[in-house]
Image (cartoon, helix red, strand yellow):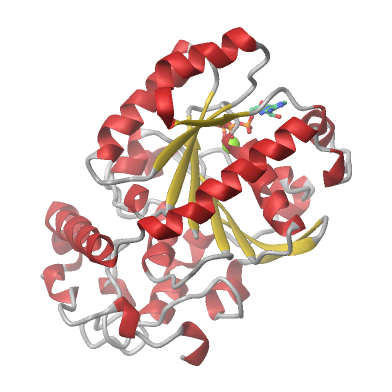
Amino acid sequence: MKIAFVGKGGSGKTTLSSLFVRHLAASGRPVVAVDADINQHLGAALGLTDEEAAAVEPLGGRLPLIKEYLRGSNPRIASADEMIKTTPPGSGSRLLSLTGDNPVYDACARRVQLDGGAVRFLATGPFTEDDLGVSCYHSKTGAVELMLNHLRDGAGEYLVVDMTAGADSFASGMFTRFDATFLVAEPTRKGVSVYRQYRDYARSFGVNLRVIGNKVQNADDAEFLREHVGCDLLVTMGQSEYVRAVEKGRTPAFATLEPDNRRALATVKEAADAAIRLRDAERWTRQAVEFHLRNARGWGNARTGRDLAQQIDPDFRWEEAPSPQLV
Ligand SMILES: Nc1ncnc2c1ncn2[C@@H]1O[C@H](COP(=O)(O)OP(=O)(O)OP(=O)(O)O)[C@@H](O)[C@H]1O
Ligand SMILES: [Mg+2]
């Protein structure tokens, strides 16, 4: 299951991503956690020291390797240089799985031991001012978008991405690649206005969007969110002593997370799991093609000197592509 946490800066995306990852790990599920936020803090929230987090090899720096691996023997992609972040898989492409090894994980993933189980951790690397330009081809999140487009995953295994809800996420098709998108909103006017903007854009693409109210301290906070978010409000989280302790660099047992917050995470997992029923292979492929053509025309063709529309393999069927473990 491909899961994104988005929201306004400071709303608690990283905190909730990390709690959700811990919750999944504690239930023994395979998890790949990806830090794709402008502020790279997921590693620390998962308990890495600053040195350990800084030593994680950024995906953004290994794009040539990632492209070379994913293109495999796809005859429509003559070289890794011609692959852009939206290049879809075709016959001969390699697919990724959430379990097992591959050169991308070998190069960039760091194993993080959490209560109950280890997870794989990946990071895009810090963003610079340059990276934030709209449709900018060296956008660090391009590596994650390529991974999402080449990932074969199923129920009970999870890719959890901590990302922004800024305009940057709409510059590419990445926001359409998730089974479930959880928007973290504080009970403030700004919090709900980010929700409205995201919803209005994402809805037209069929994005499965639910809101997690965060730092909800009283009945008035909860009422405010219900009033402004309506039935998109999935659940609320309170102020957490556990989170405060992690922030101080302590390592409390995950079992000490407050029962209400633990129940909230179980609700988030149920919503994530239920999203398998919303999968639509036809829409998935159509949107991949749509965003690829948009990027090709917008900058990709000019940049590579090729007609990147040719990369689309009309005969490629996800259902028939070989399983990554077999490649
Ligand atoms: N439920 C909570 N209980 C206690 N503290 C919280 C909670 N949620 C978030 N925080 C605190 O609020 C601050 C911001 O949270 P966090 O870093 O997760 O937000 P973010 O949306 O990822 O921010 P950024 O946009 O900077 O990446 C952190 O200090 C975090 O510990
Ligand atoms: Mg963050």
